[in-house]
Image 1 (cartoon, rainbow, N blue to C red):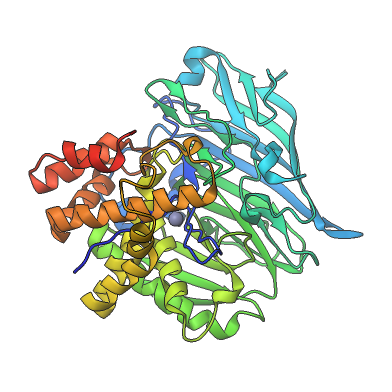
Image 2 (image 1 turned 30 degrees about the horizontal axis):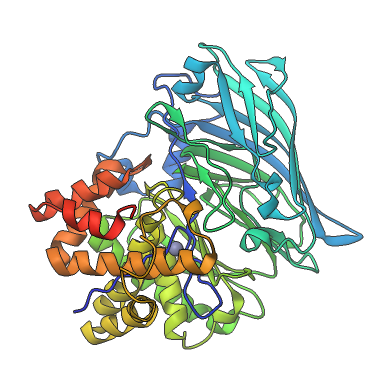
Length: 505
Ligand SMILES: [Zn+2]
């Protein structure tokens, strides 16, 4: 078994250049002060009982006491005269604020659509209340960040916001965009997003033009959506039990963000894997390939459940949506696969995209690396397990080797190998182009994990990852934690290996 791992960074997006470029959407963990009261209108335990699997609810798992609770009510509407322009307006309430906010007297939120990477899209916070008292945000020259003044005993921050999805917003892979005729839309980063904390500091980077733009904090969400009646809404989390005339409300459990997707005529096709229901949403154009997509996703989920520990959420959705410069994209509990890949049978590449994005549900979704400074972690691991690991487990060693080589190994070699490429371990801003980023982070990073598995063996490789899920899910996990997890599983010292593959030189 060859272990060539390709690292694909955050989301499983694959560049359409023929290379697989996966971008991961990284979210960050925002530790909050534990013991704070919940927001009045959020029944956390009831929400989790809907969104999380019975096994997760009844078992020991890493603490999720210190993450915010967020309630959002949002109205979404296409402009009748210009369906590709979509207006959002919402109210949002945050409880269990991060301890750092209470200690420092200010809470940052990020308005990603204001970044140039999102084209002409925009977002505004139109009013803020702190425990019922009106306040003004503190802003600086950065239109993507606001700071809300809070006090040490602040319980709840409430705000109103608006956002606009601009026409032809192909920026940022189209993750905040609508189809030209308004018949579908993908809304990532559509609300003011919490910021993760690491080492008592806010993790606030410039919004990158390469790789994943976001780094958001874990939170529990309850989201109620008022959407055009003609569109089916698919979102992170699980819809709360309700009648046909009740509001459309989703609860998420602890996740790094909530994404919304809407499509006209989307029809569900579902399969249970363990305690999770996987649903692919077929459009008229993708119905023929839906069973094959579902089959691949179900196989991947079963393989990773066994290898890394059970996926803790009750639902995983896959939607068809045209991405720009990527073929797939992961969000918590929801995967985007470009329509052209929905074929029967799937092409090997399309199957690897599905396997890659499902892997991200662990590597990015549950165990949250910082994709800005260490993109190689979630992308490299997802690329490796989405090629070699998945295909080998499902079809045998020869197939696994071939898939890894086709998507990472051969590119690594033709790029000149480790001495010729830039280190996979650089901060994202250090890569000059998307191509350079892809070669280093996906091909180089993937190759590194291939070598790591080759060195310590598949069992130790998988056990190291499993231990991270067991011990560190729902938190921002550092590069050192990954290395130490593998050192513990192999009983070896990986200092030299790590410096060789991920050093700064
Ligand atoms: Zn990826």
